[in-house]
Length: 171
Image (cartoon, rainbow, N blue to C red; front, side, top):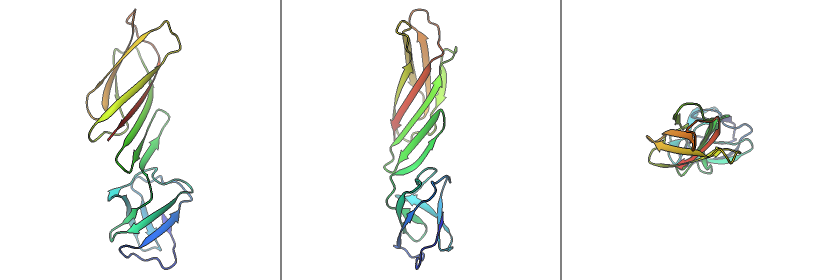
């Protein structure tokens, strides 16, 4: 992001406010004030990533001598696709989701969009309208982001083409 702010210079402690006309799509965004050089944007000293700044959002930044620290943002990163996505908050909380269909395989290995650093809780729901087709769903967390899911019919031990919705929350 490049901006022109009258009188703004790169001096430690200098604060500026910027209204974003476009959302952030850069993986590690920088801020270039008055063509004085692109400097990395951080939150709490950590880099920010794609999706951290919204269209029309107003954010306060402070130059710390090396880069621009965002003082007002809450979202450190976010990404959404048709079948998976995540939001990583400033406090380290990571919320992820994914959708997929079960197959004829006895188990399905899935990997969440981002790996967790410490621990997480995995929640899932199976989309089944038919009440006569009782399904068993089991998951096994194998590492901080990988999980194995098994779906089987209670009576016939056969597999179904069903939508599975996964939500995980962790740090």
